[in-house]
Image 1 (cartoon, rainbow, N blue to C red):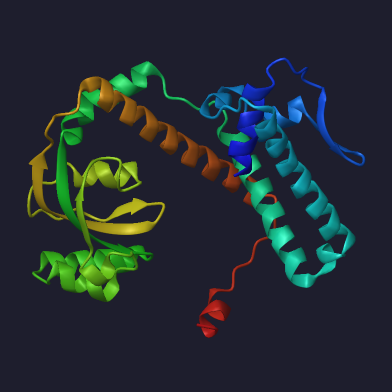
Image 2 (spheres, rainbow, N blue to C red):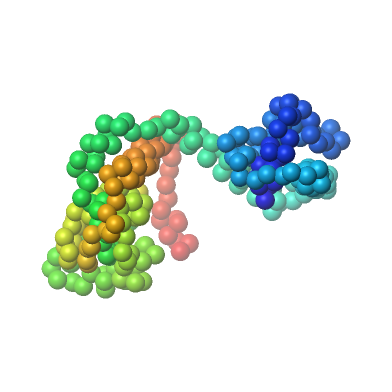
Length: 271
């Protein structure tokens, strides 16, 4: 609601100076710079327009109502309430975490050559969809054990129901029909969309854990995506991979500067 509200301000008052105050409550002021910051930049002003003074007043009053209520909440001492304080701290941590990760991945982009090289190798995998089952576990040894049982003839769906920790586990690991990019993990897709019908993969590691993938059936996409569309998809996937790798590399460096001790057995005692 606030996002939409403040977008309206820009179209309404295009002559306002960037530092000009357009509303105030006691010593709190709303300036043009504040508005642009709130809507996420001038590129977002195209989405809503206000053309009358009455609607302009309504928009400004929405900010006033928020400001007076926040001040009332502060004056009431709500910030010292344990439940409120915990929520504020959780929000603070989340904001810091997201801002720090944004700094890590800022500017990461694959080159056009990297995109084209990836297309040369994987183009055919973007031209089909596949009906896929998978088993997801956290322990690599368990994954290898399950794979051995599958190779020996055990039922894939039954093992998925018993062992898989993924949401699809209760359905025998059935992910339904998916295309490249929909699993969320490039390494998963690279294996899955190279398998033939009825084939089972080796153990595949992703950020979610260890997978065993089975392709039930495949079919060509219709209409077939263009090379340009595939390049756009690949660019997005490569960015995601680059970001994940950059964040994990940063975490590894940070962990070296701290004394870290894990007590998994204590956690298990509570489960």
